[in-house]
Image (cartoon, rainbow, N blue to C red; front, top):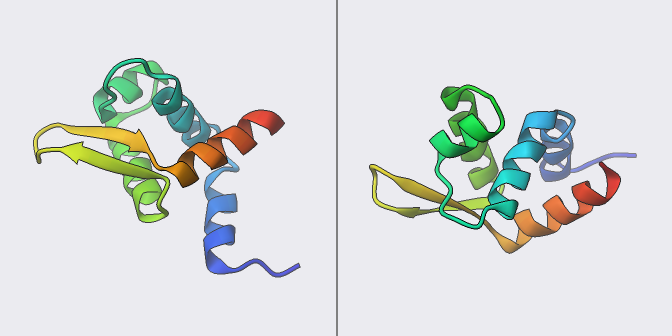
Length: 90
């Protein structure tokens, strides 16, 4: 079975727990989510969280709101769909 680049990169990304936990933290949040909050919530370094969120942003799973100083992180409809599908198999 041959996967196109977007499917392969999504599969590669979600073979790890932290990306799923990032999506879960954003999805389950009742308040505003920033990279620093996610970092504390899932016990992972801030730099790694920012790297993964930027990658998710390029894949169309997340988007940023706010100014250059503080960026709110939200899930796109595609990000919500992927989170839902991953939740069902986790």
